[in-house]
Length: 294
Ligand code: UTP
Image (cartoon, rainbow, N blue to C red; front, side):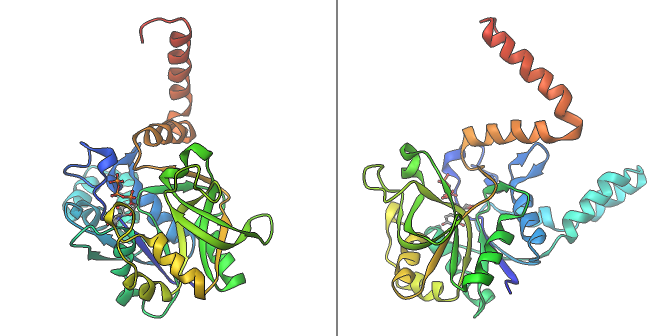
């Protein structure tokens, strides 16, 4: 039974500068909803309501977002804005959210190490705070189901183009069935000619408490950071790790181009925008085809 989730959200977000100079990338909205709210919703939809967010310098707005705002609520009620009021109350009551600050940004492995007292001796889910996955069954639920079957560390993976493997943790292993692989290797951001496969770690994990000891023993790696990938590699030698192919579409909101694509796709799925936004896109493409100025 997985009851806790950890959402690392302390990173600098250098790929999204200057927007992330004074605001968290995890708070950048997909239309009107901050990225991290989608991530928290995925936990809740997977049956997890105890969430630890790894926070840090400049990340206070994340706490404010999930906190109550009595003045704003009162104002909305005065104006009979019932729908907005209900939305706000939903955000505040979504889950039992705790925070811990990562004072120095020493990498994802170090961020997760901050969860050791909160998670104790239980397996827990990890969801990167800047990754949203659109799926019918929440990906964390997919991983929990795999954990219930194998009782090993579970890593979500997806296939990426070979030329992009240097952006991700890449796994290799032996096939168990259509979706699962028993891991034999995992490397952080390999060059395409050194990559063991093109299966990339997709920002969702079920980790077991052994990870904390492994992180403590892990030296700084790529980017001079303590890499979760390196700690997982240690675990691989003693405990098994399963890679589970995700059923869903992954969006990396820490990347500007991916962010733009996400906004377009999500807008096309929103009832109130679908028709006018599609018309706008068609008009824009027509202009491009006609080589007219936009
Ligand atoms: P990223 O790899 O996207 O790192 O982290 P980053 O530093 O935030 O982004 P760039 O590469 O500089 O643009 C994945 C997730 O892990 C968190 C981030 O906040 C993000 O949600 N993270 C990363 C931490 O919590 N602490 C860290 O030390 C590093």
